Length: 280
Image (cartoon, rainbow, N blue to C red):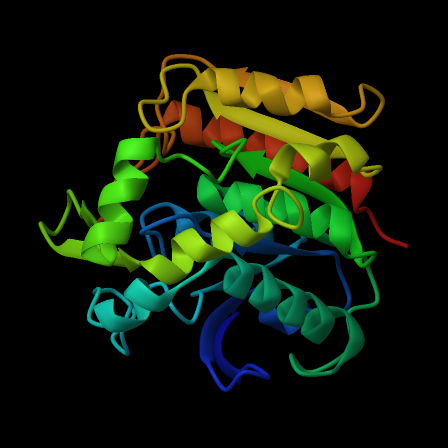
């Protein structure tokens, strides 16, 4: 069974969620999926992944960050004002609240009595890696096409960002011009070397880590996966290259069917989490 939830954070923001395997929540392990930049909980392969894990005995929670720009219809970027005000620290704080909500409460019907893992895609992969190191409730983490650094902007871009008061990106799918305000840049400048430093978190991580990355990733080059693997402890990390595929493992939005690469990503992740989440 799949069930939708809406949660109000301590800061008063709304986080919309979907729980796959809701009937069995609490009686089996759980994964929380963290979407990336311009991603959302119902993008492309995410519902398919939710059904896949739920059918294999692992509950799967997806959610929209409160400021990811997706509006009430859950499919369209109609809250670009929120997108402009978003920060990485806000996203990390919301992940922390949801981890506590899953682990320490009966919000989803009963407390979780089994292990909790994370999957993060792209920028969400960086958030997942930091959260896995920060929160004791997380037992294992998988990064899918993850960034190794949040600071992806050169000096000229930064100068223009400050001058204009925003940095604009185009959503290739919708054609929308989406602005990031200077709050994002301020956050990176303030915390980029500390609480938002992905490689430092990976280096300190003492939990099982699966690094999955497409060989032909056009958005986040494969060398970033190699960076993560270099910084990770060899006794906890496993790097898996998925050949002949890009950033989303051959999947599109709207979802028009699975691919060999996506099935390999799912099967590899399932094997990993079966070992490291198991049943207590």
